[in-house]
Amino acid sequence: MLLQAYQSNPAALQDRIILVTGAGAGLGRAAAKAFAQHGATVVLLGRTTHKLEQVYDEIEQAGGPQAAIYPLNLEGASYKDYEMLAERLEEVFGRLDGILHNAALLGGLTPFEHYSVERWYQVLQVNLNAPFMLTQTCLPLLKKSADASLVFTVSDQVQQAKAYWGAYGVSKWALQGLMLMLAQELEANTPVRVNSINPGKALTDLRRQAYPGETPDQVPLPEALMQTYLYLMSSDSRQQNGQTFECSL
Image (cartoon, rainbow, N blue to C red):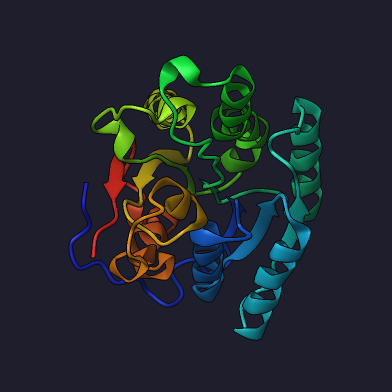
């Protein structure tokens, strides 16, 4: 699904509490800043503390609501770590109005027969197991919202399988399936809607790894794609459930 000429209200996310994974760089950083600019209190979750602190400072300097920082290495985090995160969020905020699952590992482009088992586990842990555990432990917080949005980040892989993309490609297929399943499960008697977003081309570290020969000035900056992200986290998308949204300029 492609949004046509959507323009967010400056206060579209006023008083909403949104958790963003991979918030230290790329699309996660851009989304966190855009959410804060539109009134949300953002929980910045990522592996590298100093990157999260930079985003925190940028939000503060722009006059956004005070963000929260929660460093967590998704590759090594256990289920107990996610339970502790959910407990802390409940103590501080009492609810969540949205989660953007953005953090991901590429793992390199490798023929299947040469793909290492260690890398396979590593990529699936970050790209699939982490979103599962985070969603499950934080679902009670989303249900406390009057209007909660759960967004999974997928890729072109869900439209057409591509050779050599290994665990990354598999993880995006799996996330799309998880989104569709949850959308059906939560549609009745909960305030939680579930959708996915395919950002397409964006100038991020992961994109540079995947396409090292690509000319950077031909790839949009993450900030240019934020209207779709803002739509999905705002009440404007309240009726959307089980949909995949494409970013386009």
